[in-house]
Length: 239
Image (cartoon, helix red, strand yellow):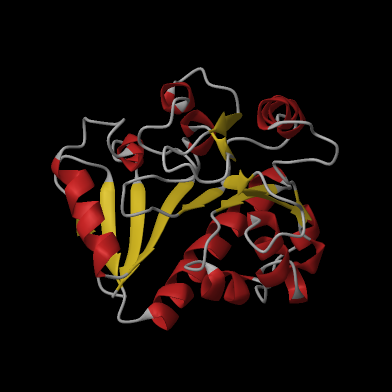
């Protein structure tokens, strides 16, 4: 990886990788370093990771890392309101690609617990349950859509302002404006303040979306990823 490009007026440092393999390698090294520091200093560590296809190679590599995984807590950034075995479920993806090999002993804390009747009740329950974890996280690995959303903090969602509020609960029920499946999302306040906040992106579309978001960093509701631009944010991108 080349020396990062620091974006003036922001806390953003951009690392450009040659391809997805080198990007996954570099991101894994960074995450392992943060987890190891947290384990040494606090005896446990909290890792927050995004879903989707982009993190797959990174999670596979991370699963082989030599860490005391039994003391690592893992939480998804967000979750779809779908059945537990649905392929679209982020926690299912985390189990498949991260909770294997050496990382099989990591403790996964799902946003949706069994028996919840609706997303709002599930968000309230998750906020209470997850409060016992060692916040702020040792490391947060975010993704971003081309519309500038991150986690399930979507532009135009009726709950977005609550999700961006500094006094928001840990977990918010979200309704994407695209009429997509309802979601649960960690709030911006829950995602902020980590020892390291990393953003994993791949492709020209995501690079252009990042540039657009950086062009007007004050308009948070239009591109919610902007809420993280005024804190240290390390962006890992490849074509």
